[in-house]
Length: 129
Ligand SMILES: [Zn+2]
Figure (cartoon, rainbow, N blue to C red):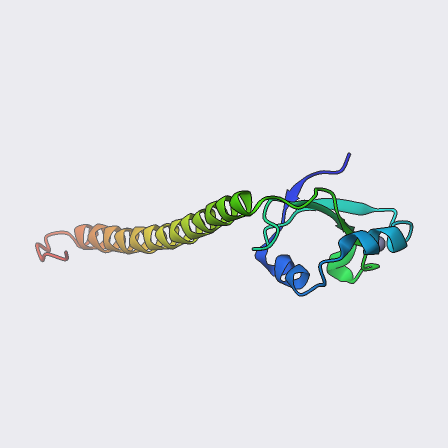
Protein backbone atom coordinates (compact mmCIF):
# COMPACT_ATOMS: atom_id res chain seq x y z
CA UNK A 1 0.00 0.00 0.00
CA UNK A 2 1.44 3.34 -1.01
CA UNK A 3 1.42 5.74 1.86
CA UNK A 4 0.30 9.30 1.39
CA UNK A 5 2.83 11.77 2.63
CA UNK A 6 2.85 15.52 2.52
CA UNK A 7 5.51 17.14 0.46
CA UNK A 8 8.01 19.56 1.96
CA UNK A 9 8.71 22.97 0.53
CA UNK A 10 12.17 21.81 -0.54
CA UNK A 11 10.90 19.26 -3.03
CA UNK A 12 8.05 21.26 -4.49
CA UNK A 13 10.36 23.94 -5.80
CA UNK A 14 12.10 21.21 -7.77
CA UNK A 15 8.75 20.22 -9.29
CA UNK A 16 7.55 23.72 -10.03
CA UNK A 17 10.51 24.12 -12.40
CA UNK A 18 9.48 21.06 -14.40
CA UNK A 19 7.47 21.19 -17.57
CA UNK A 20 3.77 20.42 -16.84
CA UNK A 21 3.48 17.38 -19.09
CA UNK A 22 3.55 14.54 -16.55
CA UNK A 23 1.32 12.15 -18.50
CA UNK A 24 3.85 11.89 -21.28
CA UNK A 25 6.52 11.10 -18.70
CA UNK A 26 4.28 8.36 -17.27
CA UNK A 27 3.75 6.73 -20.62
CA UNK A 28 7.43 6.59 -21.29
CA UNK A 29 8.96 5.90 -17.89
CA UNK A 30 6.37 3.95 -15.93
CA UNK A 31 8.27 0.65 -16.21
CA UNK A 32 11.59 2.21 -15.21
CA UNK A 33 10.57 2.65 -11.60
CA UNK A 34 9.02 -0.28 -9.78
CA UNK A 35 9.17 1.45 -6.40
CA UNK A 36 7.28 4.70 -6.76
CA UNK A 37 6.05 6.49 -3.66
CA UNK A 38 2.84 8.52 -3.59
CA UNK A 39 3.07 12.09 -2.36
CA UNK A 40 0.88 15.16 -2.17
CA UNK A 41 2.02 18.24 -4.01
CA UNK A 42 1.86 21.58 -2.20
CA UNK A 43 3.15 23.67 -5.06
CA UNK A 44 1.17 26.85 -5.86
CA UNK A 45 0.02 25.33 -9.15
CA UNK A 46 -1.05 21.90 -7.82
CA UNK A 47 -1.89 22.04 -4.12
CA UNK A 48 -3.39 18.84 -2.74
CA UNK A 49 -2.77 16.96 -5.96
CA UNK A 50 -1.33 13.47 -5.46
CA UNK A 51 1.50 12.17 -7.56
CA UNK A 52 3.88 9.25 -7.76
CA UNK A 53 7.59 9.83 -7.68
CA UNK A 54 10.60 7.49 -7.70
CA UNK A 55 11.21 6.31 -4.15
CA UNK A 56 14.90 7.12 -4.54
CA UNK A 57 14.30 10.65 -5.85
CA UNK A 58 16.10 12.21 -2.86
CA UNK A 59 19.29 10.41 -3.91
CA UNK A 60 18.77 11.12 -7.60
CA UNK A 61 16.60 8.13 -8.53
CA UNK A 62 15.44 7.45 -12.07
CA UNK A 63 13.52 10.71 -12.54
CA UNK A 64 10.13 9.00 -12.67
CA UNK A 65 7.06 10.93 -11.57
CA UNK A 66 3.46 11.12 -12.63
CA UNK A 67 0.22 12.64 -11.35
CA UNK A 68 -2.27 10.40 -9.61
CA UNK A 69 -5.07 13.01 -9.53
CA UNK A 70 -6.26 15.11 -12.41
CA UNK A 71 -6.06 18.91 -12.33
CA UNK A 72 -8.37 20.75 -9.94
CA UNK A 73 -10.45 23.92 -10.23
CA UNK A 74 -9.08 27.43 -9.77
CA UNK A 75 -11.29 27.92 -6.72
CA UNK A 76 -10.10 24.75 -4.96
CA UNK A 77 -6.52 25.65 -5.85
CA UNK A 78 -6.88 29.08 -4.24
CA UNK A 79 -8.53 27.66 -1.11
CA UNK A 80 -5.84 25.00 -0.69
CA UNK A 81 -3.03 27.54 -1.25
CA UNK A 82 -4.57 29.84 1.38
CA UNK A 83 -4.93 26.95 3.83
CA UNK A 84 -1.39 25.75 3.14
CA UNK A 85 -0.02 29.26 3.76
CA UNK A 86 -2.07 29.57 6.97
CA UNK A 87 -0.68 26.25 8.26
CA UNK A 88 2.90 27.18 7.39
CA UNK A 89 2.48 30.59 9.01
CA UNK A 90 0.98 29.06 12.17
CA UNK A 91 3.84 26.53 12.33
CA UNK A 92 6.47 29.28 12.05
CA UNK A 93 4.71 31.28 14.74
CA UNK A 94 4.50 28.21 17.01
CA UNK A 95 8.21 27.44 16.52
CA UNK A 96 9.04 31.03 17.50
CA UNK A 97 6.87 30.79 20.61
CA UNK A 98 8.38 27.45 21.64
CA UNK A 99 11.87 28.96 21.36
CA UNK A 100 10.82 32.01 23.37
CA UNK A 101 9.37 29.76 26.10
CA UNK A 102 12.58 27.71 26.21
CA UNK A 103 14.67 30.89 26.59
CA UNK A 104 12.45 32.23 29.38
CA UNK A 105 12.49 28.85 31.12
CA UNK A 106 16.30 28.84 31.07
CA UNK A 107 16.38 32.36 32.55
CA UNK A 108 13.99 31.31 35.32
CA UNK A 109 16.08 28.23 36.10
CA UNK A 110 19.24 30.39 36.29
CA UNK A 111 17.48 32.74 38.74
CA UNK A 112 16.31 29.79 40.86
CA UNK A 113 19.90 28.51 40.98
CA UNK A 114 21.12 31.97 42.06
CA UNK A 115 18.46 32.23 44.77
CA UNK A 116 19.24 28.72 46.04
CA UNK A 117 22.96 29.57 46.19
CA UNK A 118 22.23 32.82 48.04
CA UNK A 119 20.05 31.01 50.57
CA UNK A 120 22.80 28.42 51.18
CA UNK A 121 25.22 31.27 51.96
CA UNK A 122 23.16 31.72 55.10
CA UNK A 123 22.54 35.01 56.84
CA UNK A 124 22.97 36.90 53.62
CA UNK A 125 19.84 38.98 53.19
CA UNK A 126 20.99 40.55 49.96
CA UNK A 127 18.25 40.58 47.35
CA UNK A 128 19.14 38.92 44.08
CA UNK A 129 16.08 39.42 41.95
ZN1 LIG B 1 13.01 5.05 -9.70
